[in-house]
Image 1 (cartoon, rainbow, N blue to C red):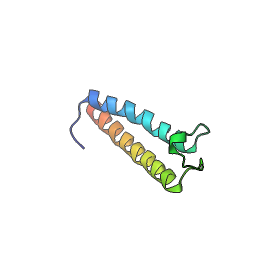
Image 2: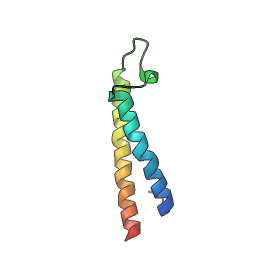
Image 3: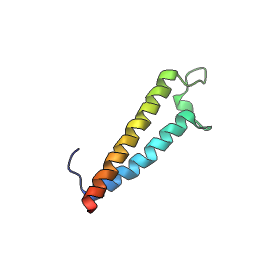
Image 4: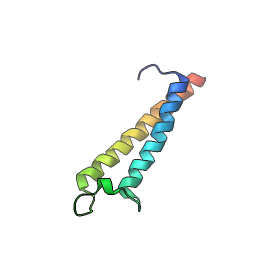
Length: 74
């Protein structure tokens, strides 16, 4: 991971903590985005898989950044 300042890490965490739940809600939530639906107003399975993969990757990035932030504060 690139060497980031504490301020940059906190900014990235703020964005990622917002992005992951939003994407997951768009796919699984009651108010899912119509942008993600096909012409039959259904969620294409490949899109749902990619969105879940994105969320898992984002959660891993969050964990890595939180660890890095903890290291910086010691």
